[in-house]
Image (cartoon, rainbow, N blue to C red):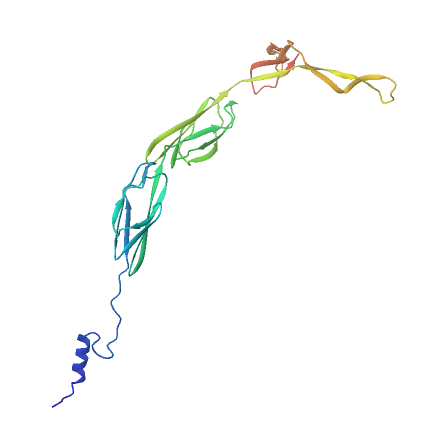
Length: 268
């Protein structure tokens, strides 16, 4: 004899047997997303040397390399490429649940090449110079000798007023090379040398005057010539001769040891 199943029992059966009853509903299980891990054995190396790249993934069926490498790769493995310079490696792994990417950057370093210069290398005391420096292949610089403290890998700086000959240096390094030092010497003098040129002028070839009645000297176009071997003196404000010399064949006399704080008068 047929007896209907009570509704409560039917509901329990539907809960126990998935999709077995009309109205059970619900989607299938979710698909996990891929994960990827990419690591380098070192992130700073000498240019031209190698690193070991190691990677692994989960929930992925294939992996593709891009950036500094390329091609299809297994879902896990390792390679040891040469590093020519700073490069970035990217790995993208794909599966039923989508894709995931990871990148790693490796810096390939050459030896630092610092250089430093001054806008003048010979100055009088109590003057300053402008220093300029640059350091390719470096990521850190320190001042030395006349400079001090941490410095950018390139820049300019005005020195203090100098009273004696001074050496200015920069010492620059990177993560895989020791520091390299570069220097410039600024010579400081407490005296100066005056160079005097002695010349004379005579009028140019005679020309007709405005009335065109006679020839006159042409002072509008004088002829300048050096005075060779003339005696030249340098006098201080009291009239005392502090230096003297003969001009050379070109009419030039050099007088050294002069005080830059004194106003001198040349006498021929």
